[in-house]
Amino acid sequence: MLRDYIAHSTDGLMSKNILVVDDEIDICFLVKDILEDEGYDVHTAHNGQEARQMLDSLEPDLILMDVWMPDVDGISLLKEWNEQGHIQHMPVIMMSGHGNIETAVEATRYGAYDFLEKPLSMAKLLITVEHALKSQLLSAENAQLKGIQVQSLNQQPDVIIELLNYYVDVFVQREKLHYRKFSIAAQNHLRQYHWPGNVLELKNLVHELLTRDGAPEIGLDEVSHLTLQRGAENDGSELKALMNLPLKPARELFEKQYLEDLLKSNNGNVSDTAQQAEVERTYLYRKLKALGIDHKQI
Image 1 (cartoon, rainbow, N blue to C red):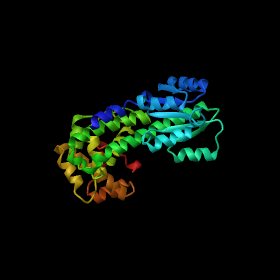
Image 2 (cartoon, helix red, strand yellow):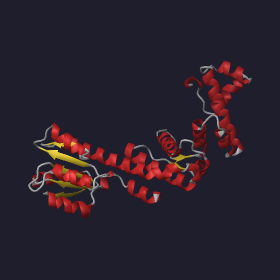
Image 3 (cartoon, rainbow, N blue to C red):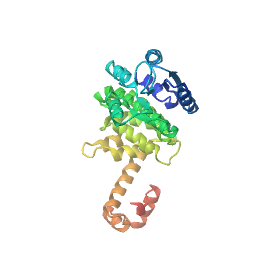
Image 4 (cartoon, helix red, strand yellow):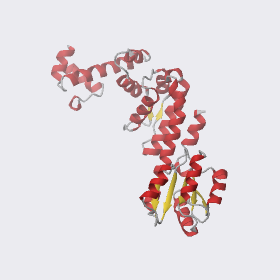
């Protein structure tokens, strides 16, 4: 279920299990201490056999593995896991103090996410781990959403609400955007919206709303105006969106869109816009102020 996936995905990167595989115990515990300070759950293995056992029992989200080990080299173990399908959705970062371009290329061919040289740069280690886990999260997200893409979102109104809340959490976590909550009226409007761009359009809409400096609650007016702007122009979608609103906000949204379009066509000139709209210039100034339109910014 999407709800279960959302709950799992929005736990964040810091709760991820990481397996460190290296026969040098000092390096194992150094990396373990550093990653645990960042909030990760870290486990260690000191040879290939231990790594195989922990792969089955731990099911780690990411593996950091040395190339040279006493019983089996890391490249061979990586190849084995790749052929068995264990690391399709699990990033593996290889480490080596004697690595070269050929080794790095071979590791990548067998499914490694990246290759780090020893002595390790702790800053580079942390950045690589974070990027690998984010990449894993995006891959899992895309795989989960493929089933939703089959049907149009307007045929799945309950899924729309789950996706709205999911993407709010995602963008707040990943991009540190300010949290904003959709009002019930805004949610209802979006449940009835036709979503010509399907999930991608919904995702972009949430992102745009969160990047704005707005109230903590996203209201009906803000959402309605945005969907009118984003709607396809030739299929009557703007009219359909207006028909779902009460008379007053529908009229205000129409007037705002109408006047903004006229101002743009007249390069922000109020006199020319008033003449084209067949209204007095003083009335137009009052109307622009009431609708929150700054003609100097057009």
